[in-house]
Image 1: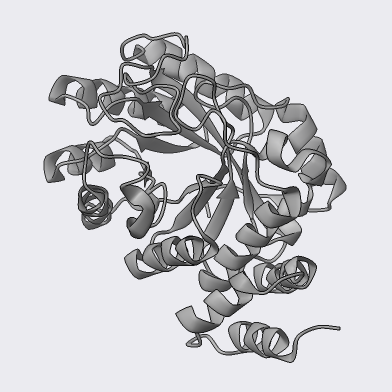
Image 2: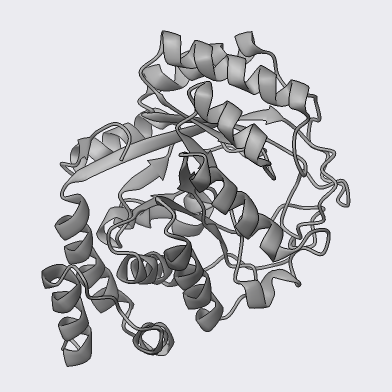
Length: 329
């Protein structure tokens, strides 16, 4: 039987635009046992209320790989880890554009250029800007970028060149961040998000679940993103990479991962929620449940250093669920 408090919260979110679930109530839902299915069903109602039947598809290119000076515990591209990945400098415009054409043909509605490292140089920002112009000229994709830390000048230039959305993950809750990364401060990431917003860019920011954080820290991250008023929340599920500090962590159980998605929808009811890396290994046969759990976006194709399943399978999944693929949300 559904919990009356859960039903009441769901109805308030759906009915009253100014209502917002409290941190206390969100923590209670997070800590409650055996409520995953109920949360998922209610999250689906909230998704339908705010996003209807519309979904979008993201794609990324690993535009500069490896040799990263940050020590993020999960990352195959960190110079602190030995993972055997291919490393290379910033790709040229031709390669960026050619891959964007392939991803548009595969069904992507958004395309992001992603680089390893703390930040880019001015010359590299110019190169990414030129690539953005060409991608906008040759495709109908919404062009995004994930280039590390920003300055005001960088953000304005990206906006002028046609980048619509800047992606910059917080990765985890502030209270757990020190266990994941020690080479920069959490506030530096917060500042980059604020700089991107000030420049008129939409902001895509989320994190990775399954790093060893508690349920309360998952709620903390969701509320931090709410306070920052980000436009889109990408949720990654840890795929432990050999050679990283997280290589021996277990995958999240599928229902726990889906409950996490539902919680983020309760806390950020009107925002876009995209399911990204790690979903294939974590969710397996439950991948189609991401939308019922509250997501309205999915990343298709390959990830930065790991393979995704075929884009055709994801597009077929969307069609079979009767969802409507649209452009930027």
